[in-house]
Image (cartoon, rainbow, N blue to C red):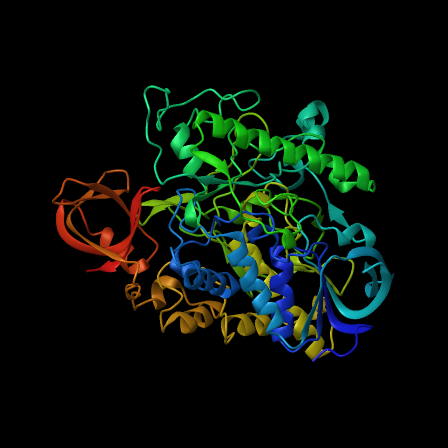
Length: 595
């Protein structure tokens, strides 16, 4: 139990999702840990920022670590389940997520949390940080520490520590990234000066008045229509129509998360104000972002004739300016640590045509350095047309999913400061790679790895820069409460009894194809499952549909390897009884097994 606040083993700064994950894991590893957050909520983008439809790591083989534990707790606590939208397979209320994380924090005897803190000074001597000075409750406090972790969305601690970091774009000539702009473009085009980081969003939450918009020809409302909204949102409904635009981020209870990227409430202007030293400029930026999101919600409210109203998702204790506005902006990118390794766009891409995985990161001796697995496809947000990115997706389970890639340990550790780590979006990546490494599931597991490494460093009396990567990998795989994958494996779900053994074998050089001899069993039945009978049809594009005797036709998807393996054998219409969860907003039947 922490009884003193003048010194701790591990100090975590920042209210990001990776920060809270790092603090929880460091405490679980036996290190006395202090978590400092600037706001009263601690979940970052998974709760306080309102990004409650997580992307990436959706397949059951990737539902590991703290992300998997968090997902299963969400499923337990949301009575309506998580299948409510079409941007993700999961949707939940921000209050549910925040309560889970606060419960986890309070359960750790080695963890102390100070909310509403300001970071004043980082005391550094040579290659080590010795202490942090913070303000809390109008009092300045100095806390000594052995390991410091930046767990913020924007890398807030890095400039105060005078730690080398990157900010903005890198030219293609620097690392040869296929999607990066040339040095000539960076110099000559104003776009890159005005848009140093990906556009953030201030999430606004709406409330649907019923599950389906009832078309009323007298008022000219058409759920599939494409109304032209007022400037600057004129084309927001052009691609998907009004109803799909609104249900994109639907949450339990008919709440809807609005962080619409297509001419919606992404914010593109004056972003450098968030990275300067003037709090008034930052406050002005935040007011502009909030007003922009509220104008977007009002435009959708008018276009839907009141089907959409403002929702109540953020209680006063969250620090939100209003019940329908997130408590903080959703930052997709900020400062990025210069680490002992750097994830580049090439590190995300499949190694060859038809390949199912990016190259595994290895040290010069050939030892695997991976400490987390991600699979998001890569996605960048800017004003104007989509930025062209090298493809890294494949068809799996009747849908598109990203091919997996690994995060090496070196991207968590500062190249210059031996006891400084990053645990959120400030890990050492290129600007282009950040589009795939910034998502909630991977960030939670990167934070877990950072916290485990910090506790290991304290236990071994070495700085994190000198931690044993094999020892850290074993700790993550064997974690009692949230075992985390460090090697990609498409074949086995997290729950499979052979999962742990395959992870260890993969570290020793055995291939998935050689060792994954046991196909995962279907997911166990859930009380939310439906059983649908009919005929499954392959659609010729890697998709499937189920036609039922009553004339319904449901697109069929799955997150389960066992179901995917069976689906690949379906070459013609086949009579089936499928067990799964119906999502009318997808729309799809997410198959978990057989009836």
